[in-house]
Amino acid sequence: MSDALELWLVRHGQTVWNAQGLVSGWTDVALSELGEQQGRDLAPYLSQHSFDGVWASTLQRAQNTARLAGFEPQTDVRLRELGFGDLEGAVWETMDPTHRNALLAFTGFQAPNG
Image (cartoon, rainbow, N blue to C red):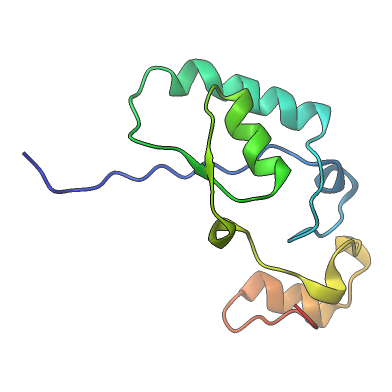
């Protein structure tokens, strides 16, 4: 018997803000119609596998993606993505290039008031 742990990471489906090119971190944005379909599309694939547990962040987009894929997730606030502070709801394309470049580089990124 192996002591190895296999971990599967699944990103939530598209949100209404993703579709509009808006930055969302801790803002509890709903899935778009496409995002809901993406969650449903996971179900046939994931149903072929056995999982000891399914966890999601406390945000509705993550929980709803799991539910649409056929699971009732346990929630944990520690699974939330970054809080983008003042950048929440910002339009990616028109965001200050300094913030955009720092976020793309990721290392050492700190959102203002995030």
